[in-house]
Image 1 (cartoon, one colour):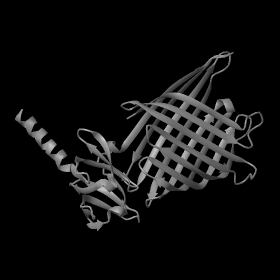
Image 2 (cartoon, helix red, strand yellow):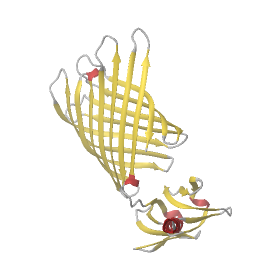
Image 3 (cartoon, rainbow, N blue to C red):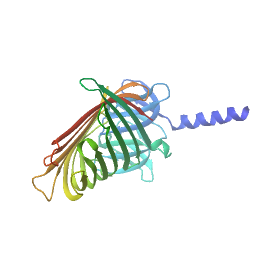
Image 4 (cartoon, rainbow, N blue to C red):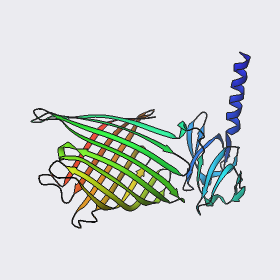
Length: 329
């Protein structure tokens, strides 16, 4: 029993030692650990009693603590060490000890030494029933996994939509995507990706897309992110009525993310064909998520695929909407 109590005391002592004190200009004090600061705006602190709280960076008068964090300045300098803040300067103590002005700090991130702490995952499940002359039941499934390092992020996502209709064969739409993003400074990123898509309703046996692009985050705060990007890709596709083709494509688009009472994510990408100047494809993917409780969200997903030169008998636009629940863990 004494051994258990001793272990608990040591563990609590380690947790307390890692926590920092945040003295605000209004005289209040918050105790916790730094989670993140983005774009020099809001500092997110994980507290023992209030969960995560957000503090305006300009409202902080002093920081005292021994937590090791990753600090990036607006001019792309990077430091890893403990941070203290005394209103006039931010002192970073590590391999390279330095003092910088508070307004020069672009981001601060906690360092997750554990592999599992850097992983996020989700699972989606949805069902739509449309009644009319025919009853159509739509089932949707999805899952994703992402890992975030200090200067890179990688993710995989997969989804499947099954359409069931009386007196006709069921149809499926399957997607898979994998991506790798590496930071080049504070605003620029290099990206590599692979996508696969099949759609029985459109007669698409399979489309594989592999490429790379450079992106720039024109807006990058904890609440909002707006990016533009451009690059090249190789499109290998096979329709039921056509043989497989492989063509190079350009890639240009933009993406937006909002974190608020409702989370919004969407991206619109254009793929001009570099061999057939009269063909243009585009793809739009968007989600709206509303927190229900804990890690469970209500989620609306919208997609649209446009092809200026589709196979004979196919529409130029293919779009859909699903409603369901999403569990994040």
